[in-house]
Amino acid sequence: MDEDVKLKPVGRQRELGTDKFIIEPRRARTLAHLHVIVTETTASTITVTHVIKQFGRFAALRDVSAAFAAGRFHAILGDNGAGKTTLLDCIAGLATPEAGTIQAGSQLFFDADTRANLAVAKRKVGYVFQDLALFPHLTVAANIAYGLDRFPAGDRERRIASILDAFRIRDLRHRRPREISGGERQRVALARSLVTDPCILLLDEPLAALDAPTKARILDDLRAWNEAHRIPILYVTHSREEVFALGERVVVLDEGRVLAQGTPHEVMGAPRQETVAQLAGFENIFDATMAAAHEDRGTMTCRLAGDKVELETPLVRADPGSTLRIGIRAGDILLAVQRPEGLSARNVLPGKVTSVARRDVIIAARVDVGVEMEVHLTLAARDALELTPGREVWLVVKTHSCHLLST
Image (tube, rainbow, N blue to C red):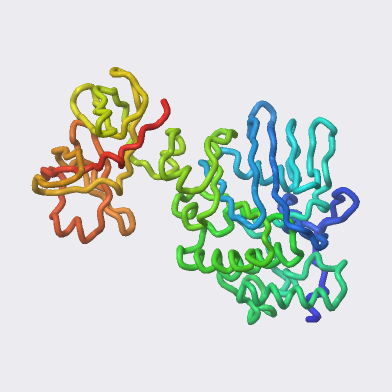
């Protein structure tokens, strides 16, 4: 065992249930990632049922119910203020709901009716925050060892060695946080949360500041670790790309409510609610009126912007004249500078480019076809098509790229 692993961090003490945590004065809610006192656990599904959380008159969570299965990544998606962090805090015990129950397998974390409220230290939760809250004066090994005091010395060293290997940071064990990179600090924070084998891991956007390749490598290592431990992992994100990269389950929150939950394909591929469509990357959302049904081919004609634009869309149950909302991803629209012919796509719309803007490696062009549509292209496509404002173009939209949303 390294000598530095035995050091105790400087800080205030705070009682939580029957156990003491040493926490940073600056931010008590970090609670040293909550896993300071943890024993071996059996992974269980975490069930949240009819949870309500108020902050004064503000309802942060409104009758939230969801189940988070062991062994799976669960992306928690939503805009700022949707209730994502509050949900994690209620599971961890950092926030106390006004109603509902929270349960890990057969162990009750919280029940408003019976006033059961398991102490934070007893919930066996790992929590990694966006700011990580590593102890700057401790080495990597000492940060990871924090909270292992109740384990035998041999077990402590075995756990530290195993988690250092799992997250590829063995060579960093004697360094301090200021001496390692941002990605390496993220690995240390994850290792510290997992070294005690929690029953659930909560991740509140700890990887948000990292570049995509670094983030992907860390997630791959976390996924490999979880193949052996099989705990639920809740991962808060704003990113549609991260939802699909995690690839298992997603819960969409909006203004404290669950809008949708399921696999990424079920929720993001064909969203019914407009808020989910926006989060899922549907840049074009329009009011439409159902004009005619074509039951023989499973489609219908919808009019946008009054009678200016017609689109053929998948058939839904609606009467002529019904008001609908249609969502189309900018990346699902093809753009041509000559009128295309001989296509299977039913929607070919003439228009004029109104603006061309670069967004990292994507070109976002806006085209007026009677309504303004956003189209995404590559840099090479922009150059090959000599795309500039004022250029006359045609947009090609497949029928099944038009998604009907709830109004």
